[in-house]
Amino acid sequence: MDTNEKQHLTPAQRRRKMEMKKRRQKELQRRKRRKKILIGAAIAVCVVILAFSIYQVIRLVGLGSSDISAKGETFVIALDPGHGGEDTGMSSGEAVEKEIDLKICSKLKIMLESQGYQVVLTREDDTRLSKEERAALANESGADLLVSVHCNYSETDASLSGAVTCFRQGDKQSKALAENIQTDLTAETGAADGGVSAGSYTILNDTEMPAVLVQPGYLSSDTDAGSLAEDSYQNDVAKGIAYGILASLDRG
Ligand SMILES: [Zn+2]
Image (tube, rainbow, N blue to C red; front, top):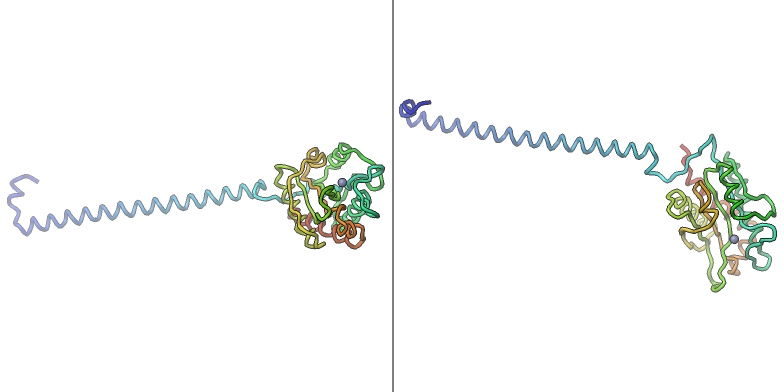
């Protein structure tokens, strides 16, 4: 447009031209806004897809779960009754730790085998084994998890009672197993809940599978010692531990 032409425009034509210019600018701004919204929506969709993919990968490699899987066709569970032979463990009157530990593990073995699982005991009778031998036996068995059974004892406080479960320091699966066992054990027996904690024992440190050490009661407590010596209470302890183990397995 040259200056001559501009001069020839009537005021009405000039107004119309201005209006058209404004309208074009508005349309341009609207398009820009729409583009921004579309880009925003596309980014949101990408973020959702990416988050979902990451979740699927985590699920597939099992990082999000503490469940224990079977290496073979069925679960192999190692049970380790504490003490044995001349090593009696702690005792209180009739209640002798090595016997209580073995009885609980033997009952547990029957319960777990009834579920179709394979059970390996580090000792099946009144034999003495070193801590290292126990860990080696468990490792050689290729077990998917290990539960060691002991009784607690306090030299200083006879009023201390209840169940405690220890797990291998820094191992998520061992911790989850300990928590499940502790929950079901206290529910089945009504024992006071002493909680779970990381424990530094050879049977936890030197074994390769998720491993816990369960102490269902204190032999230094008259009440706990009386209960632990009872066959029906030992059954409840075994049942609680068995439920806790079942709750920790990835059974597909
Ligand atoms: Zn012990």
